[in-house]
Amino acid sequence: MLLDEMIYHRLAECRALGEKLAVYADGPAIFNTEFPSDQQEGWGGMNQYPRICYRTDMQVNQERSSSGTLHVAVYTDRTSRIIEELETQVRECLKDVLMKPSDQAPFCVAWARTETYQMYGSAVLCRDILFDVIEFPAQETTDPDPVMAVAEFIKKMFPDAVVLGVDRIGDFVNPADKPVFYCRLQDIHGTTGPCMHTVSWFIAGVAVHLLYPTALTRLKMIASINQIMQINEEIIMPDQSPMMIRELRMDNKADYLREGQLLVTGKYGCLRGAEKKHNMDFIGMGFTDY
Image 1 (cartoon, rainbow, N blue to C red):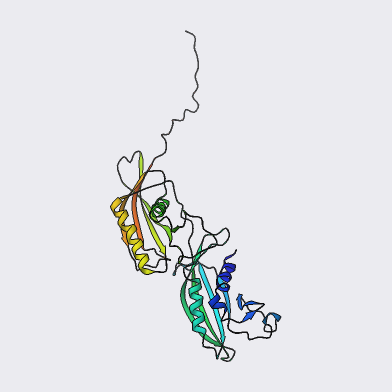
Image 2 (tube, one colour; image 1 turned 90 degrees about the vertical axis):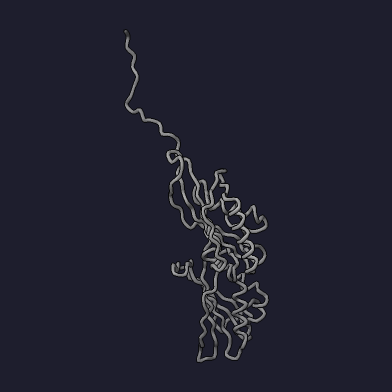
């Protein structure tokens, strides 16, 4: 499915939301980009409000660290008093849910703001709910890979959780059912260390995001990871070499969709390439009789 189709699926499958919307062609009045005209047979001569129209604008917004914007416009007639309920249900339906379109990285949406205005001479009330669309791209880096090392460490600690990059996921992942971890590369830079003629040393920063609706559970799980890493003092990387923990910085108030609640800073080494052989170009061997 495409992202637009997945958003429709989430909204249309929400029974509490659908029961409050008008009916079009035997389904809830939810439309992508534009409505059908008022004369379309799908309305069946019935009331056409409340209804929803949504669209996605996939332009990167660096200021909000988003990959695009989702607009969900809720329309009711002026006499209706359920527009606030509809907004709440739209936000709850989309909150934190990971959606993985075909051949793309997973996406999640985060509420940004809501704008309300009147239309058609104040006969219709519209509430435009804006969400930031946030991408969670694959984070495989080098060999050895500090991001995968942290991800696999977390998977061993919480085998029942979903760890992006380690677990295969379907179209939808709801963190309310299982906690979802995402490990993201913050930076890598070279540094000094022993045996530098044979080993190149690096310091990597890996941000750990935990998606889960309950704040207390997020706090406990992130604090547990922080404590165990601090006790162990190292993480074994995929090639079985150690990454020494240099610093752990936990911020439970951080935006878990954009920033991550734990920053792991580790130092690791990579063996330099095999010894270069001398090139013996234009050298031959001859035999002489004595």
